[in-house]
Length: 116
Image 1 (spheres, helix red, strand yellow):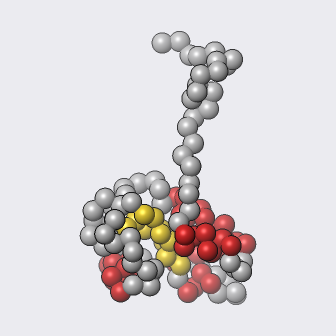
Image 2 (cartoon, rainbow, N blue to C red):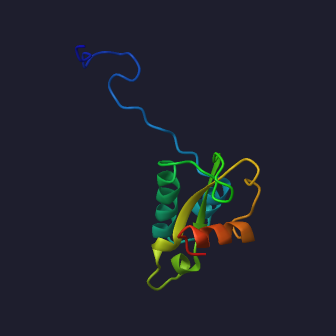
């Protein structure tokens, strides 16, 4: 099949599709809060990168519908922050009401390689 003309006006012909990233409420609070700009950028990028790969609930391994970001205390340090403690994770519909500091989430992050 021939390539479409560069003048083609049909949708999706000139550019690849771009997925829209809608940050969660938690991420929006961090972006609007009084944090370092580097931390804000890292949190947004981690939330966006979590959309790639398997969307499985962190707690029960069901289909994930809500993405959240865990921010460790080491990332909030003023002197030499460790951004490796920022972890995106998915939650299913039944676990989506859990708060980021909940015991189930911290236990699941600890067992799956996170750093709570």
